[in-house]
Length: 290
Image (tube, rainbow, N blue to C red):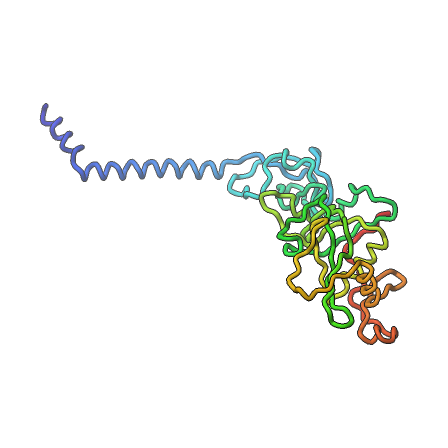
């Protein structure tokens, strides 16, 4: 081996040399990766944009979509980059998409998730009306009440003697929809289930009025239970009563005005029927089926 070969061998077997070379290689690889990342982030891509101004509750078609090149860096995770995720969707309530704007996931919903649209798909029996029943995660047993299931509604209240009574107010009520506070389907996204605020029912006019009156009473509890089951009652002193007793209690503590708004009676009214205390003259977000 000549002197050059010996020197080269010593150079590459030197630990310091190997370390320096390793650092240089790593820096080169980092630079190449960074350069590629920067270029890929600024390279323009084609994304769908609104071909014209799109108003709320409009079904998106191919005619509503144009394309334009934008830098990848401005395309966030909520931007829809394929027409396959846009066509057939509806713009949400209160959303207007300007011409040239990209489509954002929170702006578009399925037809069934537009507040109030669920009513169009319900085959109401003669005289039935759409009713929104107020609820929450706890009342729905940990969000376990699903659309197309059936529930019973129990009522718990103190009678005129101060005794706690419990009974079934309504039974075999079909749950048509479960909506959050914005009127969107709680179960629309299986990966991120929302928090229930309303259950949609189809009720006869009499039951519609009865439940409206019951929900106006602030000193009672309305308890959901799966059809045919009994609610868990911790107090052993609860008196079980029938639905007629509950209806009499509700009628004794509420009145109906001519326009069918509900008012809750004050203590004086229960005694002499002369005055009433208005609680909220607007019924729940219900739409009467015509």
